[in-house]
Amino acid sequence: MSAYLTSDIYQLSQRLGLMLKENGLIVGTAESCTGGWIAQAVTMVPGSSSWFDAGFVTYSNQSKVQQLGVDPNLIDQYGAVSDVVVEKMLIGVLTRTGANCSIATSGVAGPDGGTEDKPVGTVWIGVGHEIKGLMTRKFLFEGDRNSVRQQSVIESLSLMEHFLAQD
Image 1 (tube, rainbow, N blue to C red):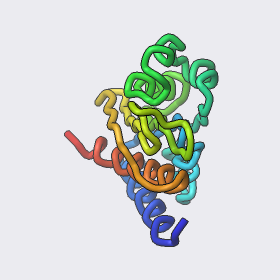
Image 2: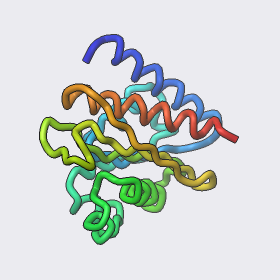
Image 3: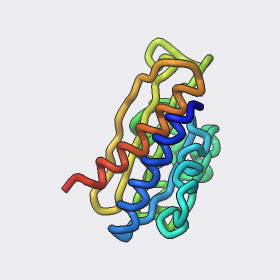
Image 4: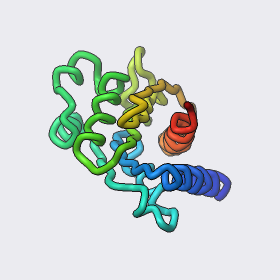
């Protein structure tokens, strides 16, 4: 990872942490394709224990079901890389932790696993808040596996920041 992107992720994490702390909010994460990178990014920031509760790395479908309560029928019907599953991952964080905000990711980082409907680089990112509700966005990132994952982390942090800033 380039020093620029490391700095970018750290700055995003700092800004998000400040926003969460100032508003008395606590975030938790549910990550598939990012493999815990978002949780690692936010906990790089000193003082993050006051605004970060827990992170789930639910890489397999079974772990999404067992750890987050995602209905396996939804995974069968829509696939793990879908807005519906990411929404359920967000809800799983909110109901299973002390967090009142959540971030979730599920995607195809590659180099294999892509389909015509969900090519490599397809990532669903979701953010949630116990009062504001949930928001999901679909991204199609380019680059190798590391680049897709890195872009997913950056967009996740940015999306959470923008979501919380909305009235």
